[in-house]
Length: 325
Image (cartoon, rainbow, N blue to C red; front, side, top):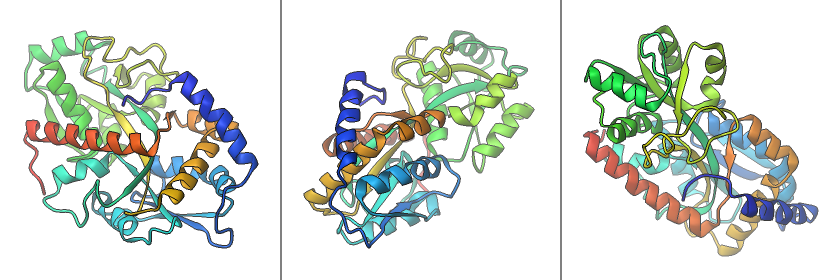
């Protein structure tokens, strides 16, 4: 599944969602729904879920309580989701890291696919490859690849940490473009972007919202976006697909899940609530302002997508020789 917005499908979601929102779904109104996030407050997924909060609460017919449980690459929070009662009162929102973790950790206290109940892949945050223009004066993929191939092993790419989706996005570029570039891991996106601007590292792949201001200021230059279609935030930046790398489609996706063995009726109720909330003009505007592409799926499609993504990243991690911790 590619994370682009299908116009007809999204229109159907809007109409269905409007109808659902008009009639609150069956819920336990006196008991808040617990929404666990295995990430820190202020992160991308945190901002997405908090923007959803008011409309999601209306659609559910009950308040929601967002609980950040970061730590151990998402394992801490995910363990809490897995161990929660399957009563429909606890859900979680996960990112790519959930399906990457089996390949970067020697062991996990749960099975990433069997011990959750997929409800919906909500959408994704687009990635963009940026360069420091004083270090790499390239404006497109062809120019960048030529510069990198002229001096193999000389240049480097930054990431937000070993085994993160940002790391794998940079590694995937190296594999698809056939270039030899060194990896420089940082502890988070903020330090990574700061050093890109300062010229301590040469290039990196990062979520679009994290660098939009720097692209406008000219301190960083966009070379290509990792979506399969151009995005409204950077309409003049071509995709990697357009520029001759058809397999370079990667972004930061986010998905709603429940504990294992969540009853089908609860899956249907929660899925309907998210569908309704995402169809409201308020939430659509909020998601667009954050730079997110909203493309909600069925529970079945979510399960299939997560499985395919786990296989995809496992193959890439094996190829680049990243050893499990």
